[in-house]
Length: 182
Image (cartoon, rainbow, N blue to C red; front, side, top):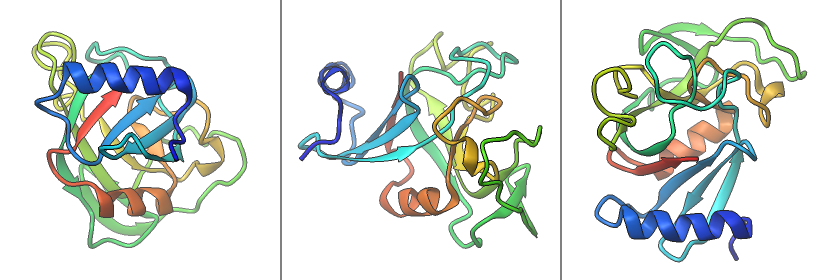
């Protein structure tokens, strides 16, 4: 049974048609309006995860701190051997573990924890290319210490997940997995 809302189910059908040469099984769709990430299989069956996109909104412009939209793929998976809640700086694990904030309050930090799925845009002049490139903007799906803010926009551009959810997701996706952000 699909967990997708009807409006997203229709959008998924359009995405599958438009990007058929990039669709993988499974693939991911990030619904910024609902602050949910859905992992979708070939029958449009899904599993959903609460997320946080940017508190600055949606957009592809470099230095905007917004979450980019459109078609992407996972370019790199980082951290599969690391522990939950481990802090990454410059995509390198520091060995330190973060304290998880379960309350809905911001710590003014945007820590990257546990796992990193580094995204590469697939749409030239939208999220790929000069001034808009998601990969060059270091846009990730990653674990966060501010788990109490999941379900509302709170990041500085990336897509945040709970640390247990990003571990689960990383076990089910690979480099090349298609990601669509709306």
